[in-house]
Length: 98
Image (cartoon, rainbow, N blue to C red; front, side, top):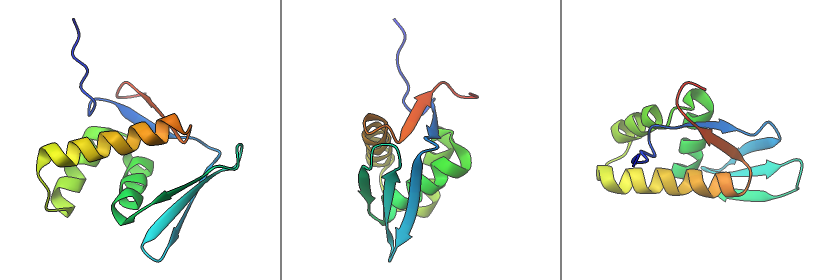
């Protein structure tokens, strides 16, 4: 049985997703569906790091340096947001390196 390691994945932002930051918060618009998705300051930072790096373990390590939060909580919050974005079709996830 293979154990899934959620940080050992890569996230790719959908090309139809448009990100705009507004006063510390952000909104993502899916141009294909017209869906809006709001992000708080931390969520906006996660989106920016996914866009810049893709590799969720690297995103996690950067967030660890920037925020004072327990590792378990940080991983939970990161994975939960990525899953929500995936469910909305705003990101795709896959194995590292792809």
